[in-house]
Length: 478
Image (cartoon, rainbow, N blue to C red; front, side, top):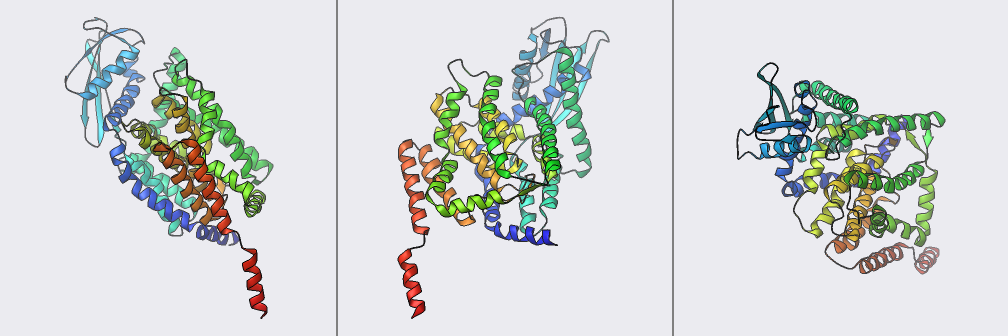
């Protein structure tokens, strides 16, 4: 009973944030509708079908680097263009190799269906493989949106999270509830088979990146469960500040690893990008600035530090893997790879990082997944300073989204280092004076000066005036 009352009180105190987040998530798909590259969506769907076929038993006879002939069925098909481009990375294509022949057939509506055929010389017939892939869109946000709705209606956090994850899986299964078990099994079976065959034949291509998130999420899930098990065994309650500090330590590690995987240019250094990104942490550094200026914030921070957070919401560990099952990696590709200007790109990176931290509920895995996507799709070809701004906006937004995410293993789930009103005002100031002004070309020192003055002015306006208090006391005594 006491737990339900505490949860109800927490939900009521966090209501303003839930409403703001609800409005943002409801409006965001409309804002991002023009920001999704449909060609990238189709490319990712073809790539997913290709990799399922590549490691299936029907294509087991095709050795990497061998010669084969690709027979075009439709010269105007962009799907076949993507398929042929991927074949060129794994095989040597010749018009008449005499070794093997491959052809592909595609059909697209809300999903992409493919049939790939290989000419087998031993049995003198075509061996076919069929599969389908749902085209990614902003429907991937529907599950978290439903979870927020349920929290607003008074449902428990655990039920809301489970129901939101289930809705995401039903969406990925084309709204067919009966297909969800098969969809889950296919995801596990395909990735397990591919990993086993890659280890057997020693085939690890640096051009093959879409499986890295799937493979890494299993490693992250195992390590997270192990760490949380020992934390729970040692103490039923844990200090949240330790996990936040560890997540900051993980940022340069993730950036260094993803830069290695993406093979950045030789003149690009990940450590320069990381240290440069610290200049664009407007939200994090504003909190630090407020810590030194406002003594009330120090007491608030110490109060949160003394407050223990129970590690009980283990079901939230499945949020990252459900996100990837629902084509989350393809969604990141389609959102980030859009021909927009630098100003819109910076602001879009901030919004995507905010959503990623909120939906995944894991700051560590959000950092890893987002850094991998940025390293692969937006390498530092425009200089260290521009790349530093992107990573600074992203890392800062992930922290902000993680604060407000209900998909965390910690309970209570809504955590803000400030009271709700101050938190909203600080976020608004960092967005306007930091992210927006920097994105439109205002010099960084000027933006920091404006942001610092606005934070200082807000603190001064909210401090109780001594003369007013004395006047109030005198009036009451009279």
